Amino acid sequence: MDFNQTRTTAGPFSTSDTAMLEALVPGFGFISRFLYSYLNFDITAYFQLMIALTVFGATFRYIFFVIWERFSEFFVSTAEIRLDDEIFSYLMYWVSRQQQMRRTNRFVAGVKANGYISDEDSDDEDGDEMEDETNWDGAPAADNTFDTYWAKVVSRDKYKALQFTPAEGSHYFWYKNRPMMLTRSNQEGGTRYVLNNERLYLSCLGRDPSILKSLLWEAQQAYVERDGNMTVIYRGGRYSGGGSYYWIRCMARVPRPLSTVILDQSQKDEFVDDIKEYLHPRTRRWYSNRGIPYRRGYLLHGPPGTGKTSLCFAAAGLLGLKLYLLDLNSSSLDEESLSSLFADLPRRCIVLLEDVDSAGIAKTRGANQAADVPDDSPADAGADAKVLPEEPKKGGVTLSGLLNVIDGVAATEGRILVMTTNHADKLDPALLRPGRVDMTVTFGYTSEADIKEMFISIYVTMEGDLARNQILSAISNGLPPRIAVKVPAEITDGRVGTNGKVNGTVAAAPKHEKDELQARLQSLRASISGLADEFAAVVPAGTFTAAEIQGYLLNHKEAPKAAIEGAAEWVQTSLEKKRAREEKEQVS
Ligand SMILES: Nc1ncnc2c1ncn2[C@@H]1O[C@H](COP(=O)(O)OP(=O)(O)OP(=O)(O)O)[C@@H](O)[C@H]1O
Image (tube, rainbow, N blue to C red):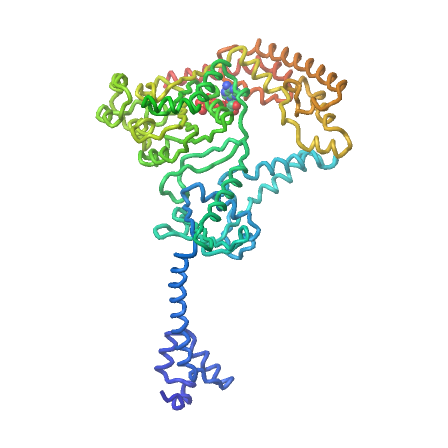
């Protein structure tokens, strides 16, 4: 090509050359004219060299990838981690806490509520609570008003916690002196914004994958240890954007002591002992030796607000079991999702199905569907045959679908199923037959003893009622921590520590102080017990639920005497409201 001829018209190129090069490299014509005019540099003299370099580069890149693929196949170990598995959260949690990964310049930023590391989790709530207490109790006296404290809390709560995780692509870091690579990718089929298809690949050099496993174990340990002895709660739901149902971790809560659930002691003991007996290893063997499916089901029934959910939550905390909540009312929950959720349950856990009567499955199994449900014993056939004809269901789950997941042939073993209802009489007998419901706990309105117990439980000073930094500030002021404990017990109106172990510091006091404090606690306990008798004399037994009484007492949580004084009026107003509601219900 004779470039000299064309230089006079369009710089160093012919028009057709320029057009071709421009098409290949946008802006090429302008750059070459610029270089030629101002620097007298003829870029086309290097044209062939440039083509050669480009071809060489592309070839090199291709060869590099082929070699890398072969190399990876033989010399790199890789673990694949999928979003729908809990290990994804373990790894993300671990990674987001690594200094090296925090320095990455490509990351996904999100606020806590949207992240899958701690979705709606109480992750930082402990820290927040501690900060709240510090703001409140630890501030200098002039500053220690509710308004100052609240202004700080409100301004802090405006800022959601930011969460950073490595972005799509590969990231390199060192672990136990070994180079590691973490690749985050979206698989085909998902979209960038729907995270359902996200995968993580964790790779290390060498054919031995033990370092990967050890990292994953460490990640799991870090994630699980964060929960301590909290009760972890999962709910059946879908990640944003729809798709399949998963058990999504929603929070970890401080366990509720069983003693705070007011219910006949023998009923509580029977319930908890039955679960313990079921969880015992010899029971599993006993079941399998006899060919009986290893499952246990409970029905908790009674009016709303009588403690059904509370008992279930307390039992989960006591036994260190995870709690899986499922809303059968959800219209998007179909039978396939229900069975995949049940199939994903761990071996030991409590599944809580609340208000099963209102889930649109009450008495809805048609006779034609009865054959779908394999029964464990012929005796059940009678009960099942009594079912009423099918009615149109509200949600996506039918009774037959539910029965299948509870104890069909493919049903999982080992889990504890707890169903709660306000209307046991509305439930299909098939759902209640032994094998599906093995024990029923009945909740009712509060007895006289329950009312007294509720009153005492509200007004005792529980362990943990006192702010941590009350004790810390006492220590920093040179006072022994027990001084900080004595003050609230003395100043409160009839409030008293449970069994003299307020914050566990009484035992550490010198003997004379300990005796004095014990005596004071005894007398306060006697006085609160006397007040509880007075309260129970005004509030009629068998009329109110525990939730109603709790609601009333919470309005007077620092003033037991005021609660007693206002009780008669509250009882009268509440009964009138109840009567009016009942009359309205009868009319409609
Ligand atoms: N027996 C009880 N002992 C202690 N607290 C109770 C009891 N019953 C109710 N409460 C209190 O009332 C509130 C509601 O209780 P809970 O959710 O356990 O009732 P529920 O019977 O499951 O109600 P629902 O049928 O409406 O779901 C909670 O704050 C709980 O602390």
